[in-house]
Length: 441
Figure 1 (tube, rainbow, N blue to C red):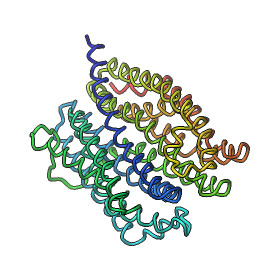
Figure 2: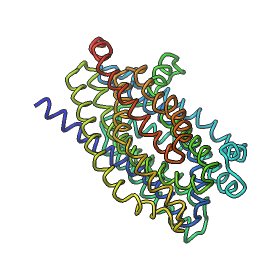
Figure 3: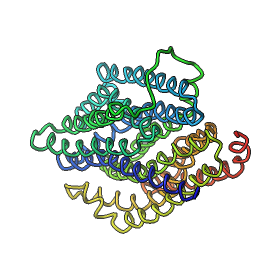
């Protein structure tokens, strides 16, 4: 009965969160689709150049949201609601303060940021516009991450899923309206994206109106140890988001001398499809997180380990299905984002998809391990896996393999890195589980 209950809880949380994450990533795909239709390869290039900034905003938001939600759930499961509310309050004010830095950057230096990201004369204006609006609206993105994570950890995964899907569907509809009937171009695309978190938060507010929320603002100053704990547990989420932006920037820098803006546009197709695939794995991992944190807080080792087993099994099965789809239909998938029928773009993107996504299963395993370690307060192991896959191995691999195999070497660096890290992550778990998990109880 205990195993059956654990499996049902995992399916409930993981399924709802995967749906929400797919919807969340789909509005980025919608940007790619509608921008490719409305602005061609130049629009795709501008979007891809701006993604690192979006990753930075998301990373900061996810660091506070995930770290705070993990600690909140552990404290709540131990009956310590007072400190749980202190965690929520400190996390909220941290999110607000950090978002103000992004707002000021969007007002004062959007052009400098666009130049720094590599925008040339052809795409500078579009890149600057996208960045400026995105940065000004950053508080909504960060607060939306915060409330989604706390609502999910407050035993309301269905409402969190509805909020994510509603914001994403609204964004897709607004993308079409702003770009085509209203002819707003890149401005329309970014405005549609920025409306999504606002709509999501309006729906999440129902959790408070129903008076079902267990988290509340309390009078308190900033608590040093609590902020340190939240940031430590959420740090892997920050690195994951930032590293994805840095990797995109590095890949762009490698591809531009080799293939020009067409190579960057082709990578835009791969990178945005990757967001959807990785979001499925992230959905499984984030769905697992409240259950792992609760089991860890109450000392239920069996439930904690079973939840990890279910998550890893789900990743392996889904990866087989996803890679089969991508391998067989790589050309039609590319054609969806290649309205101009550019043969050079297709020649780069089609083999790129097949090579790049051969590492999807290892990436999924690494994402699950990262969040499992964080959810059970094994911050160091979580940070190790994240840093290895996000920065330490992927960047030198990209330069080395590109020098040897050209463009295909760039794509190959992803599966090579993820495979190596998945092996190391497994070693960290099997060698350290007796010390890191059992000793905690």
